[in-house]
Length: 314
Image (cartoon, rainbow, N blue to C red; front, side):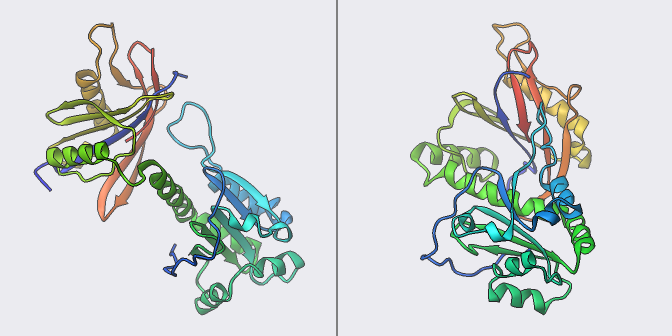
């Protein structure tokens, strides 16, 4: 790493304004997982889904995605009763199984049929365990999460306590699938851009297919993928001075500074990028990337003349 100890990575989408994972080897005989983008099957009895447990799950999985101009849930969630969880549905990308281990009703007994002997053994070994994450349980490329408790009250408590872990587990699964689709095997143009960014900044990152260089300045790189919508990747960097650099107001000021300097069509009036933090406050979240402190920012941007705009992830 060079002297550039602070990086700000921004993904802009242009448009109209407005737990633990198993390390088991993949069984090649299993089918490939399938399913819609950001879709989760929740396998639990209908009475449980319609009650307090289902309400707790919906509050976690279907909360509004921050940084968008309209409300959109984080995930599309489909409840499937255990008796209806047949072979076809077992191939889905994302599966969340929720049950009470002490419940002896027919639905719960059906549910436990889908726990493999290895899964049940792992649960029984640790009575404090409330979640178990498994890869490729029924299909390749699949992520399955088991959440359990001794009764419904215990289940609600466990869901609320493990909120962030549940979200991150399925969000990471979706990110990994999307990266494989976007990046593919890498082409010559991608490699050139990745090498250029590393040579300039010391930042090592994968560039999705279809992006081309739009601007290359001293401490600023703009990559653009034309289409409907346009997708833009902006990278800028500077010297680290203090943690105050990570505060939202300072990030907004920095964004607006490079937005005016680098993303400004001087042939048009007020045609420069501006953060719309007064219309929708920028949301900041502390995360960890490969052991490094990172802050993730979400919000809205627009050209000052309001001719273009959309959400951003920084």
